[in-house]
Amino acid sequence: KSEFDIQKHMLVPKHEIMTEEEIANEFSDVDYDFKDLPKIKVNDPVAKSIGAEPGNVLRITRQSQTAGVFVTYRIVEL
Image 1 (cartoon, one colour):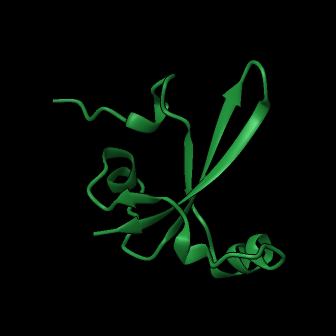
Image 2 (image 1 turned 60 degrees about the horizontal axis):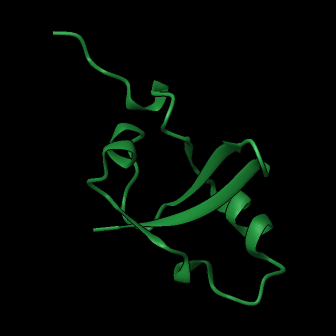
């Protein structure tokens, strides 16, 4: 049985676990706490495939015909 890599699917945007340093840099000049980001479940198929754990912040990069590159963030929860 071959393993399917969900991150290689054309409809799945790139998900990356951010480092503490990246989080500090990205959210240093915003007026909200990164802990208030939209949530993604730890058992989400993509979150599971990259080894995300509760409390991790994910950078999700989408390619858009109208917006070009569009980046969003999610915090992993149980």
